[in-house]
Length: 255
Image (cartoon, rainbow, N blue to C red; front, side):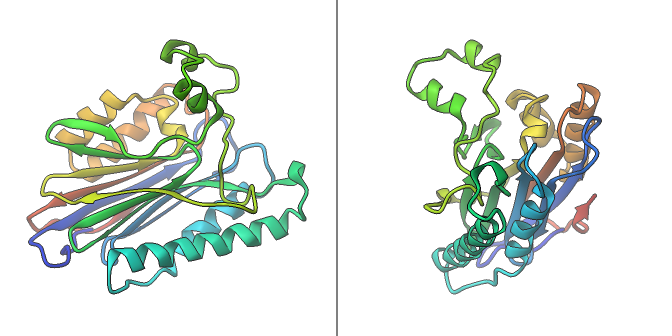
């Protein structure tokens, strides 16, 4: 999809794709992309918990119901309010039983007035590719990331840590919930990549960089999905790519 960024001669070329992978019977990921309003989301229903697909779809629906606002700050607060409401609904659905958590990760990108806000909870990620380099804008809410930050584990040890998939923050998991966020300026040529851990469990950052900088959003999302599937596809896989361009393109591709 190609739409104009407010006040700038910029447009968004968007592709969004999701796949159950080779192992799981149900795709518990949900994606949402609306370049017209400047909002894109990946949500990963928590594997092993009941109704993970319901949790992630509620997040996508909250994004769908988030209207544009007078400023990016107001737009962001409207999205937060929607996710807070989902959190309360999921907590009620689990009846307060920790062993019956109905939850989901989320990674969201909002763009307005040539500025962006990435918001997240869990291990779904938001990347920014700019000037030939890739940067993870989000920071994983996982046990292994906390151990890395404290210097308890090295990156090599973290890669094989048995509890590396344990999430420390998710929508629907706790009462005192808050999305983490990061903001910045949108520049011509930027590429944002949102993805679930079904992608990053098989594909590294350099491989995401190589494809996202060389290919169209649609081609890059297809190739990243195919690479994850070729390497086992052990989890649901979702990828949303947003290219900031200055020319006409075609339409949103969602698969």
